[in-house]
Length: 176
Image (cartoon, rainbow, N blue to C red; front, side):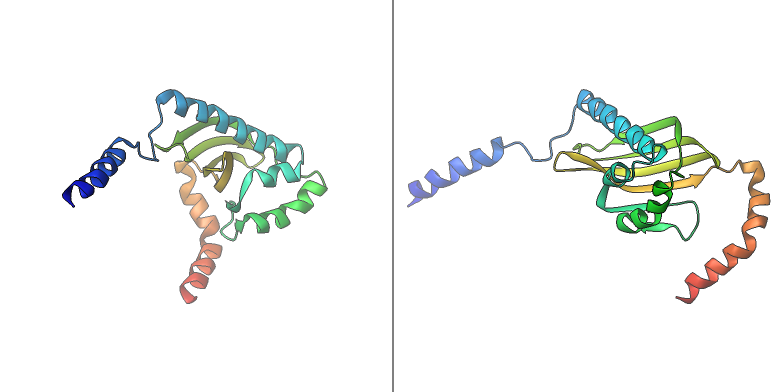
């Protein structure tokens, strides 16, 4: 009986010990290649908006993606953002974000990445940031946040400008 157990246990332990984990870490070269691919994806995404290519723009986002705009009310699912943005694309009154600087970081397994970017926009300098995920070999934007960059020396002025509306928003969320 012991011989039978050893016949099964030893090969099993050997097999498990020699098997590489499914979440193998990437090399620096592999990460660099992903960064180039994601930089291209983000550049194309911004060009799609500038050229009013609505489907190309929306399809760069994952089905469960989120777009957060500059206003406190702008927290959309991909479908909501698609509906909101379509009239702008139809009228060719879209936005043209030009990247000034971008950082892309790739997770250890190469399935996800995150980024931040400074953008030249009609609003002035903005910051975009987000998460990108590899969904079955296709990189998709899962989460994007756009914010207006406010110089620290202008914060007191901005706080005063926003004070009334901010207090209403705070009150609304505290009452929910």
